[in-house]
Image 1 (cartoon, helix red, strand yellow):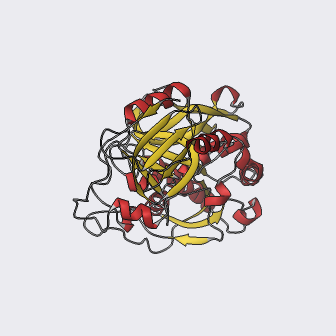
Image 2 (cartoon, helix red, strand yellow; image 1 turned 60 degrees about the vertical axis):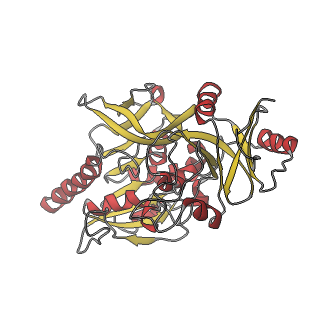
Length: 392
C-alpha cells in the first residue's frame, strides 16, 4: 500500500482506494464512512451546486480548485433539496465563509446532511491517479479519534460493484408529478415566477437540476415534471407541446430499460424533444445507438465543445461518466457536437425533426453561459409546431 500523510495534526479522515492507496487528511462534516466512485471536478466555483447535483449520486468528488467553503452556503444555490454526492475531497480545509450571500458554513451544512469531507489532501496527485487509472472505487471514512480499520476500508472499496449496470435515476427522481414556474436568478429580484399560459412541456426527472427547470421556465415553458418511470401514456395524457429529458446518475443502459420504451412512444408523435446529459444518452439509446463507460469521465466547468454544424466552440459545464458511442448512431441521426478534449460525442439531432440533445449542461450552475441558447431553440421548435398546427 502507498500512503499520503498530512504534515500537521493527527489524521481524522482516510480515503482508501481499491488498489490499496491511502490518503490521510482532516475530516469535516458527518462522521462515519461511505463507499463510492471517485471523480474530480475542475470548476473554480459552485461546490454547493456540485454537491447537490443528482448526477453525482454514487460518487465522491475531488475538487481540484483549492478554495472550497469560502463563500459559505445558502438555500438559493441548492440544485436539489439535499446533497446527493457521497462526499468531498479538498486540498485545504474549508474556511469560515466570507460572502454577503452566505447563510451558513459548508462544514455545518455537510454535517447536518450526513455527507463526509476530507481536507489536507494532495488533490493534484489524486487527480493524476484518476486520469491515469480511471475513476477508482473508494471508501471514505471520518473518525474524530483517528482510528481506522484500514483492511476493512480497502476491502469495502474493492467489493463495491460500481456504477456499471446500476440504475440510480429512480433513487433521485421525484415520486409524483409537480408543476414548476420559477425562473432563472436575476439581479436584483433574485428568483421570480413565470405567469400566464406558456408552452406546455413535460420534463422527465432522471435527477433534474433546479436550474434546468428554471431555464425552461425562463424560455416561456409551462413545465410539468414527471418521475423517471413515467410511461409514454403518462406523458401524452398531459397533451405536451414538447418533452424534455433531464440529467441524472448511473448507467444509462440500466435506466434505459424503462426510459427507452417511453421515449420511443413519444417519438411516434411529432413532438419536439430536448435532452441533457443522461437525457441525451436516453435519447441516443431510444434511437438505436449505444453508450459506453469512460475512463474518468468529464466533470468541470471549462470543457470546450465544438458545434460541427456551425464551427462554433462553446465552453461548457459537464458531469458524466458514460458517453454515447458516435460510431453506433443510426441513419437519420447526426452527431452535432464533439468534445475538443477527447473527441467524444457531445450532441445529436434527428434529421428533419425537432429532436436533439447534448451531453453537456447548458444551464451551467456552475459554469459558463455559452449554451443557454439551446433552451430558446427548444422553445422555438414548439412555437413553430404550434403555428403550423394552427394554420393547418
